[in-house]
Length: 405
Image 1 (cartoon, rainbow, N blue to C red):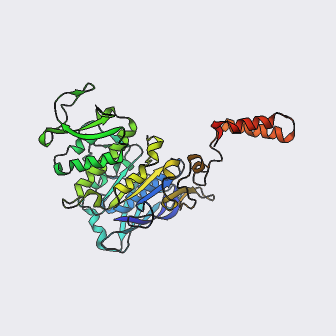
Image 2: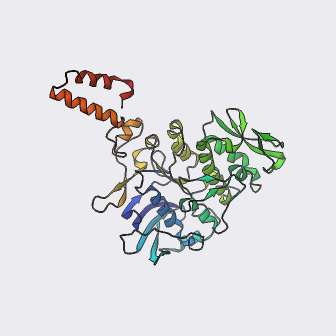
């Protein structure tokens, strides 16, 4: 199931908005990608939450999910999320509506749909309505697992978008799961395809009790043939917890996604064939600019049947996809509410300072603010004739290599 369109009324920062999404199988580059741009507080995370609620709301009341402060304060105490979904069977779109109502200090969910197809969302297993969500606060547990027993499997996959203390399983323990011995090498291959291979590599090596950099491996389970998962940084084996924040954050959510794909993927199918929706807040989190340039195209190509919705503050991420994949958060002048609009100006291939000065980011200049003020003051002096040397100083400042943007 994919989300073709979503309408939102009275949900937190949104009074009313509607937006169409790109879905796998469409025309053009990266048809399975949607990249959401916007300033802090514009509503990017709320949009991801709306997508998650809208797609699986029938399963949420009994999942451990507790709606909290979702209804917009200035509304009539009700919020509505309308989703138009599309899947291979049936091929035609099908709609689904969720009502969030205030009941005193609490909120409750109710829903209605136009056909019986949506009843499959009540089943925890299976690949229908596959949905995963990852917040900007994604944390990886050091221990074997911290799954909250209060949460259903469907809600566990998106709980990070709503629960501030959610942890994902340590990738080593997820990759080491004995339920999937025949797919371990393929899963590791997926990870290696998506991380910069000139620095980090994940391998299967012979398991021998010992330590790496003083860290005991006794806690790691042995796999078939006494093999174990190992991380190598520039050829030197290191413990997962010794990796940088960027690698841990990226591998953490990627391994969680792969693990959940394994849970629903039939034996006769490749993981890359599973359809579904994946929501990732701040895809550029902790990533070096060089990695930001390629992360979205790489993920899009690796999982062509998954529909991705990413948020980002990175001009490099924004410039890595065509304008038809960009969604922009904006504010209405009359009430300050947020709305989502489709990107129009092409950023594809532009330099970072050009992207930041575009309509998407709205910076008047990427120069340091003090530099701009000094430049403006010199311009006033030169135009008034009070300082004959002002024009020469302006030329010197603009000629500096550091002031090209």
